[in-house]
Image (cartoon, rainbow, N blue to C red; front, side):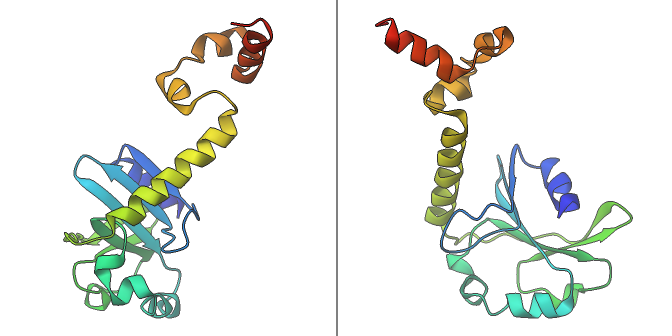
Amino acid sequence: MQLGVRWLGRKCSVVLFEAAATKGEIPDVIGWAGTGSVMIECKASRSDFLRDATKPTRKKPAVGMAHRRYYLCPANVLQVEDMPPRWGLLWAEKNRVTVKREARGFPERNLLAEVQFLSSMLRRAQIRIGTRPLSEWLRGENRFEAVRGISPNQTRTKAAVNGS
């Protein structure tokens, strides 16, 4: 999976992995770039790949997430001929990823699932940064406090006490 994260990180500005955020599809690695979303499903064995084919999102590709979808496996575990239509194939070998087939794209996909997934990830980020609004944190408005060693929550609490 780490190779998939690294490979996708070169193509996408945002990459998430092992993020169980929704009731539906849980991608191993997913990223977003200007050209759309890209998902990687990591498979260690052929039997793992065959089990994956039984998922509802594999039976009906239009309900799955991501514009481009790939399977990543150790070299020679899966072949191009094994791939479902439009799926790409990546081989992990010697600490690098080799593209065996490019993903061709799914124009019909579950955009709502992607938005719900991202929304869940942002909620988790909000919980981790505390009471400060996520928009402030994303704009970097906590950078000055961080330099001074003051947590954003401490600053907000002091302001509330002082009536600011």
